[in-house]
Length: 267
Ligand code: SF4
Ligand code: SF4
Image 1 (tube, helix red, strand yellow):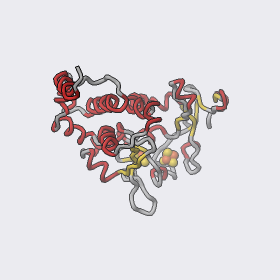
Image 2 (image 1 turned 90 degrees about the horizontal axis):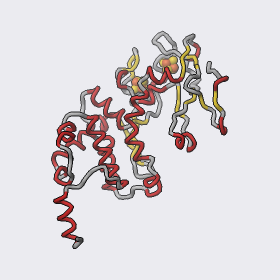
Image 3 (image 1 turned 120 degrees about the horizontal axis):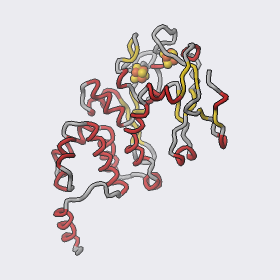
């Protein structure tokens, strides 16, 4: 049951308002329990990967190798999807008879269900998020008596935090400069992949290459990214913003800059 009376049909866009109510509950007693965790395409965000690899206690490299496929998008940015098991039902590798084994760290798209974001140029321009209810025919959760509002559901599933964490990544991938340009250079594509998804490798790159010599960095920030994955992810996004979009979010080491100018004969 969705509260159709509060649907917003502005300019042909049919979405729910934050206060719109819908009927839904999911629990182990339902006949459909865990059916939705099979044969599905789950696109993982950088923050999804950060959370899951830490929940599993493995490196980002091992997680990517064992649990994901990557797909190259037209923009030159890769997307990463969860690899389903090679069984008859193509089960999610984390599903158990009692539910999700990584429930606290499950991906964004599993959290948001049964809602789905409605994204159009209009909604993106407004900077607001809109949702509709997904209609999966076998899902019995819609027949339960419990009702909730869109905003309460999103809050209860931790979605505001996930949206906040996705912001620096989205700022890059939705930048008009990049969407027109497309990244064609293979080496740059690989650097983007590492910064977005393979954080443990990015950390080694920062600390084991000449990276720290190239940039005038804050020692406290560098200290933090040595052990804090969220700080490392934010730093990686800053590096991409600097390198791909030319935003001055990182400062080049003045000595390196002077040497480069001398090399190029620039005063
Ligand atoms: S199909 Fe719906 S009700 Fe059933 S387990 Fe999945 S989300 Fe829950
Ligand atoms: S990650 Fe968890 S909730 Fe998502 S499909 Fe897999 S088992 Fe289901």
